[in-house]
Each structure stands twice: as structure tokens, then as C-alpha cells.
Image (cartoon, rainbow, N blue to C red; front, side, top):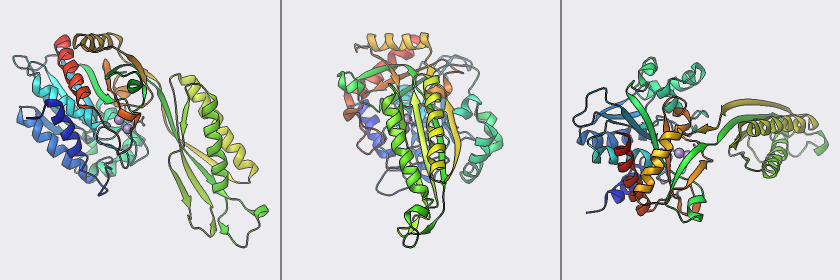
Length: 394
Ligand code: HGY
Ligand code: MN
Ligand code: MN
């Protein structure tokens, strides 16, 4: 009989097969395979008595009052996200939900809600954290309007979004997540206690030039949107490399009309900027947008910037973080505090519910890739820490 940790890993690998794209794992906001994931995890949660539902934001919710407890006993939410990036690995987000269900199955005394958030990556609509923002009531009207068609298409009613708010007896939020970076592996550590999550900015920069014939238009007479974008993309890398602790990524580009014999008339590039200090991050964004305008001006190209996200850095709850560290220590593992460069639902939840995060080592430091993986002994460690944490706070 495989260990509990191996069953968690096997479950994540099974869920990775529920995808929009055969042959690779891509599961975006409320796409059809998300319904498959809800069915699979919902059946597991029901099998040991959890009340299972899908809220109007598409979050999978399993709740159970601890044995011998009353309905308003302090409740711990254990959550993470079920959506993925394109061609994802099997563990980003999903692992935290599956570990939560495994803990709910073990710790019958605890009043727990397990949540699988519907949208954390921001792939389908360009806006992240829709599920967790519905949970804490910070989903703005513009984002809700953007999400409405997908919500209705999934068979849900956007008017019910207010009912997605967390229960009043909710006392704490805990998220298990792969580190998605090289730190724990480089230190030969299985687990990391998160002290804060770096802030992130996302924007879409559009360069508008003039589409024209590739054969008849002299170089001096072109208003090429793609060469303007390319010059700016190189500068983004240069600026980020010159600032300590700053990372900036232009991960997605759309070229129109995208034909070999046509000078590109319009190019849209995504911008993702992160830093532990909000002033540094926001200053870098201002600098990069000014540079885009400058480059465009010199090339007689128009530039338009649409800000998509300005998410401040978020500290985890100090008392809960220390209880989590105590649980790591009592389970016999070294305690290592670290800041998260990746964004997580915990950063949306933390300003509303005391929150803590536990990282599991990422072998090879790889994530957002099919090569993403976890070690069974690290999942075993995380479950052992989770059991002790539940005893400390229940
Ligand atoms: O982009 C991130 O930081 C996370 O993986 N959504
Ligand atoms: Mn991710
Ligand atoms: Mn994630």
C-alpha cells in the first residue's frame, strides 16, 4: 500500500491529465477540465464526510466541522489554486489542495475548509487571483465583468459571488506550495516557512506602427512595431539586471498581422515585475513604461500601456508563522524562513485572514514546466508538519 505522501503525488499526476490541450497540462479559469478536477476531488472529500460545493467564482469548497465540535468552532482554511499555466507541471497549486484534503481526512478533530481556487495564474483573462479575491470580497466590478461570461459558461451565477465570502468562524489560512525556485534545494532543505510574498506588477504594453509591404518599404520609411518592442524588451532585461532583487519578464507577445512578408503594424507585450519592496517595484515599472514611450517616440510608433495588476508585497501573520515554524521543528525538520518571489493566493487572503505558507523543495528549482516535481519524502514532511500545526491551532 503506497504511503499517504505517494498517494498525494499520484493524485496530482492524475489531475494533471485533466487538460485543455492533449499531451500537455493546461487548465485555465473555469475551462471544461476544471469540472473533471472538481468531480475527482469532490468525491474524495465527500468520502470522509466533507460538505462539498463550487462557489460562484468557481472555487471548489470542502468543509467539515471537527468531531465533537459545534458548527461555529474556529475553522482553518487550507487552500491553493487548481488552474495552471500553459504546459504546466503537476504540482503548482494542486499540491496544496491535495495535501489539504489529505490532512482533513487524517485530522478528524479539526474544523477545516479545503479550497481549490479557480484562477490564480491569470492566464485566461490576463487578471490573476479571481478565486481568492472572491473569497475575501475584493473582486472589483471590472474584473467580475471580465469573468462573467466564463462563470456563466461554467453553469454558475455571477450574482452569487457575495456568497463566496469566507465563513465568520474562519480563524486562519494555510497554504502548502512548491517553492518554484532553487533556494531550498541549494540548502539541502525539504521545507521553507514563508515570511512574506514579493509584490508584483503586471501590464500590457502595445506598440502601434504601420503595417506595410516587406519588399517595397525602404528601412528609413518604416514604422515597425516589432523592432520597437524588441528594443524595449532588451532594455527590460537590462534594467532588471541592474537592480538588486528585481525581476522583470516579458513572457507573452502578440504580433499583428504576424506574416513573414508584412512589416508588423501592432505588437502587444506582457510585462511582469516583482520585488520585495513595493517602492522599488513601482519605480522600476514607471522607468520601464517611460522607456517604452521614449523608444516608440524615436521610431514614430505610438505606445499604449494598460496596467493589469499592482499587488503589494504581503507579510504572513507573525504568530501563525511562528506556530508553523514550531510545527516544523516538532516534526524534526530544520526551520528555514524565506520570502516568496512567486505570487500566491495567500497574498490575497493574508490582509483579511491570518495566513501562513509552507514551501516544499523544488528539485532542479524548476516550475511552470512539465519538469516540475516534488520528492515523496518532502510531501511526507509537509503532511507531518500539517498534522502538528492542526494540533497547535485547533
Ligand atoms: O506568477 C506567479 O507568481 C504565480 O505562479 N502565479
Ligand atoms: Mn504558478
Ligand atoms: Mn502557484
